[in-house]
Structures are given as C-alpha cells and as structure tokens.
Length: 88
Image (cartoon, rainbow, N blue to C red; front, side, top):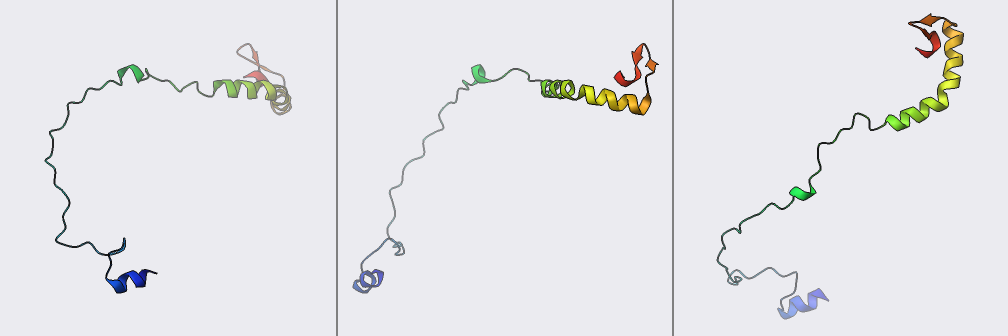
C-alpha cells in the first residue's frame, strides 16, 4: 500500500518534509501581565502532629485489657507516683 504511493512519487504522512516549504511565521507578542488570584484558595498553616491520634486512641482502647494483664504478669501490682505500675 505505501509502496504504491512511493512508486508514484506521491507525498504521504511518512514522507520527509521538503526543505523549501516553511510554515507561516508570526511575530512574538509581549507577555501578558499576570495577576495572582489564588490567595482565596490557599490553606492556612496545617498541623499534622495529631494526625493519627484518633487511630492510636482507638487501638489503645481495644488493646488496654490485654496490655494491663501482660504488664501485671511482668512487673506485678506496684505503685509508681500514685499510679499502678501497669498503667505507667
């Protein structure tokens, strides 16, 4: 198919461009003035120090009974600064 066009000397999409053909040239315009309108979309200062606090609290709530039992087995029932050893 392509060889038929090439044999007839026809130009195809895969043909090399002719050096004497140049596209139109346009004068370059000066850059437009830019106005930054994104101030209303910027976020305030963000803090991530408590980002996972709810996950850790939920996890501790579920694990607390098992952790207390293991702490009692390891360290016994003592008191440190007015709190039970297993709670410290």
